[in-house]
Image (cartoon, rainbow, N blue to C red):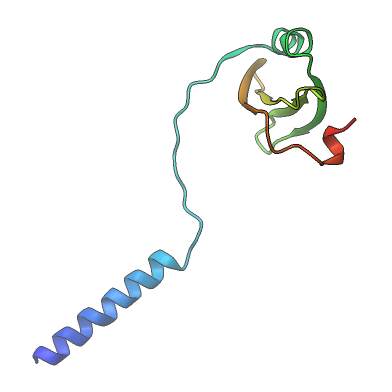
Length: 106
């Protein structure tokens, strides 16, 4: 009886581990506070102060406008998104990772 109990426990453990590690996709809820304003204010700020131009844009499945702005001299970039309520928020920015890509060398 003891061997049977240990065998059942090992099989259950293997099934649990298989279920946990067989799916590499995990769903995580992240709460973040963004700095937001009107679209015209944010884009004018990026153009005038940051000397950045829009190099790409797309519309997400949630009907959000996603835009990428880049300064070709400094190689600094910013990604912003605008929601359907008219608010535009800075998502992320940086100064590395765009070198050599033809999209950024306009």
